[in-house]
Length: 241
Ligand SMILES: NC(=O)c1ccc[n+]([C@@H]2O[C@H](COP(=O)([O-])OP(=O)(O)OC[C@H]3O[C@@H](n4cnc5c(N)ncnc54)[C@H](OP(=O)(O)O)[C@@H]3O)[C@@H](O)[C@H]2O)c1
Image 1 (cartoon, rainbow, N blue to C red):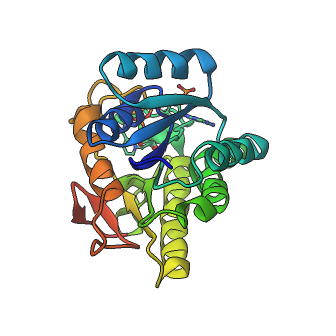
Image 2 (image 1 turned 30 degrees about the vertical axis):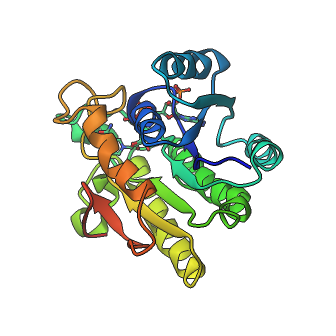
């Protein structure tokens, strides 16, 4: 039986997910790094392993039900449990030059693009939760982190980017629903906004590094038993839904 915590991080080949995988490994976890492309996830895992991290690559497109089932089967076979699930993989398929909000209007967005955004940002986390909660229940204190966004806050809902915004609002709803159903168990789930980070998604003008964005996610992944569940956080502080 594995002595360390076993963490699963999706979208771990680059950006915030790569930083989360590195920091969870540095805190003593074994990290299963999930990516869509064998080449990029193998490369990312090798990079971290060369730095001494205990990480393993795993190829899965999180929107593919059979790939998620295969991931759960591998976790059951090789480890018998999962301690941490970070639903980080995400897409922002609308044009997101933030100086041009009208380029992504609710009146012109292709509903198929919205559906594809939902598939990755909201339905894949649902599928991963369904597949991995039985394994997380085998942990002494399972933790799920849904990597959300301030752009999904209903209290600050602005115009533009409806696909991305609605998908993150749905992810936040999933966080609340799951937390309610997990009440009374050792499992905790929270949504975390990493802030606006300089990644392929965030672009070069973003105000934070991926490393800075990763910190609040790692905080939620390593919450103590008396930590919160069912909340929405940035930098370890609650924010409005
Ligand atoms: N950057 C920001 O400013 C910001 C702000 C708020 C929230 N977030 C959220 O933070 C998370 C990470 O964002 P990021 O900025 O690091 O984005 P990123 O640099 O674009 O990286 C996204 C990652 O998700 C993976 N991914 C996408 N679709 C996938 C799929 N179907 N299956 C498996 N992996 C998939 C990508 O894999 P490939 O390499 O194969 O494409 C990539 O590794 C996202 O959920 C995002 O919405 C980011």
